[in-house]
Amino acid sequence: MENDDFRKHAHHFVDWMADYMEGVGNFPVRSQVRPGDVLEKLPLQPPVNSESMDEIFTDFKNTILPGITHWQHPNWFGFFPANSSGPSVLAEMLITTMGAQCMIWETSPAATELEIRVLDWLRQMLALPEGFQGVIQDTASSATFCAVIAAREKALKGMGNEQGLAGQKNKLVIYASEEAHSSIEKAVLMSGLGRDNLRKIPILDDYSLSIDHLRAAIKEDREQGKIPAGLIACLGSTSVGAVDPIVEMGEIALKENMYFHVDAAWAGSALILPEYQGLIGEAMGVDSFVFNPHKWLLTNFDCTAHFVKNEEDLTSALSILPEYLKTREGKDVRDYRDWGIQLGRRFRSLKLWFVLRSYGVAKLQEFIRNHISWANKLANKIKVEKNFELVTKPSFSLFCFRWIPFDQLKQNIPRCQADDGFLTKEAEIIVDQLNDKLLQAINDDGRIYLTRTVVGKRVAIRFSVGSQNTTEAHVDEAWKTIKEIAGKISIN
Ligand SMILES: *Cc1c(COP(=O)(O)O)cnc(C)c1O
Image 1: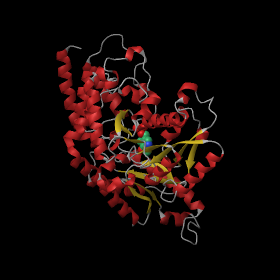
Image 2: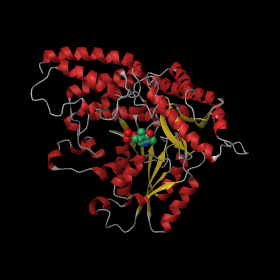
Image 3: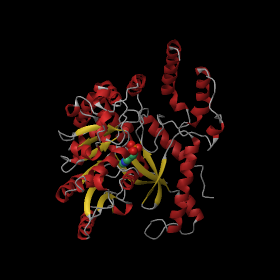
Image 4: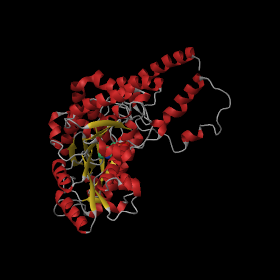
């Protein structure tokens, strides 16, 4: 491409980008295409001759855009947010233009040194202990995988890497709650520890890990000659936002000499608010902590902040140094390739730098605080609604609810409530179906977007506030939309 053409198209695209950001609320939130719709419009063969950027861009608008689910939509209340923001997008433009591959210090010293600095800014913002060192990983899943490998190698004194697991006498065990994210199970599988050696610890009424059950499980495993190698806490579970007792788990990890990793992928961003920092106390016993600025801190995917107490736990498990990667500076500099899975690395610290400077800590705090406050206000409203139930109270900016249309139930099911007032089993099954129906109707409608979950075996609908374009008015309007759509659904 000629540079003049690049300049022309880039200006044009930037106009499109600004228009998109402004008008994203006009799209249906969830893409309304059917499976195969996009594929069908794409030619089977690659183009032999060059096509003009105008043609390509037209196809982008006509073929691709309808197949996009608009995560930046102000009515995004699904999953968790995946924030984008002006400063972050601007940084991405520069990053991608330079196209630097930042695997080691020498391949772009600024990338490494900026990463060290901005991650320490984040560490301070979250009030993690001094001395914790940060690295940007692509995803929380990768960070958790690295933590499990570090746990494995710490327990085996590096022998897992040397001899493999087949030759080890004692089985290693990783502990996490039943509520923990699927990435933990995946990490246990990938690290070769085996699913049988992931102990899923029962949870309490607030969905947090039961310390008593954890203690009992560790004791039982030790008696069977197994080695408790790793403990993983959840700070803000995906389904309901559960928060494990991190301070107590840290004490156990210290006493039992277990590697302790905290998965705060989503809710970690809320720790920039002093009122939440008590959840991790002094981080005693914590070896590793992960959260995603790419979820709820205005930084485009991908950008996962991973902090470790002892960098050697990570680097000794993951470092390999072939001849072609040896450089003059050697140990005088930090080579982040030793801190994660992949060799190649994008220059992700730049967007974090742009975001942190452009907003400043105070604005970021306000951003998170607003979401939490709006979620709480709506949850309080739902609590007193006749035909809705607040299933889980807000954890940060996430709560779950379900629709229970009593009038319809009474008309259709002779005995829908037991003497104690609870729904009968028969009614519960119908209510599950109705909530699935409601959720699909909401997402098909396109004005708002929500995600399903199951809480205590019953279908519930999650409501998660976190899009950078959401205002309190959007939250209020979303509630009206939910009620309106529910009003059109009948049991039959
Ligand atoms: C989102 C999430 C993850 C996975 O994050 P990725 O960055 O997509 O790998 C892990 N744990 C929790 C609690 C999450 O909410």
